[in-house]
Image (cartoon, rainbow, N blue to C red; front, side, top):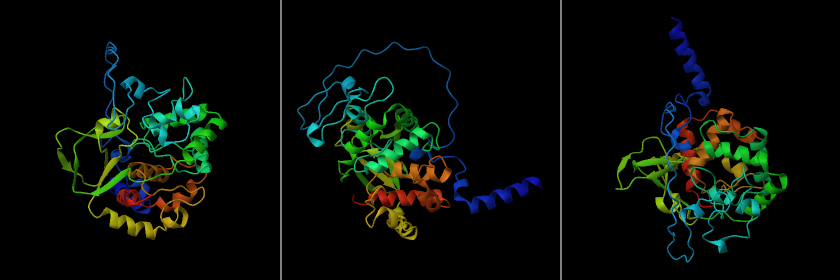
Length: 326
């Protein structure tokens, strides 16, 4: 009898608050993890010998620069394939600060486009950017998925960076417009079979497909260009469930997203532009707010909006917003 009562009460709570209806925790597809709970840690293996450095020069089509893999992935001075694309980078963006702060341009790219496992930061207002860094620093912006390494890294960076370094990064990325195309949203019943590398979904060779279900699978247009070369001109394709764009548009109107984010979702004042941004990122942020992991200064505006939304609601909103032209 007690077990039946418990089920009834749990069901009532689930109806009352959609935030409690994610039975299996954060949606893995949005955070860069396989579905379900974390796998138990494997026994520690004996340390392997370090591989010989890859000194092969790498190139991009139509680009006369060349870098080795070590140079491309250098956390304190990564490759800049297109220096003509952006203003002069402040030192914190170009080189970071040893030993704890990697260059902003490594993960977010010199043009601020970012990738599905982190965030696109170009085109954000200086005030908004600075506030997010303060939220990371003060413990008000965390991830609902504790394994989310990029969020944990940002918390560390924010605590180590000076206020002036944060301001320099904010002004630099804020001066670069967020432009299309970067993410192509495609309604589909299937998506490429993928592997996960550092929180990034990469399509397997062979072009095999699998049912998409109620997920968004966001993959690089060119896996090597993104994963190996970190090409800031090579964007993403986001596969979303059929019908999600229409549902998302209707829900965005019902929730009056445009009141704060602007008629075209391009932002108003410090409220950020969200049109054309990564749907995986958008999903993560709404889920984090819903679960109370993200509770910074302006999160109070979003909390009541997302409080009672289901996972499908958050998914279709993310898909629709990502499909809009910035």
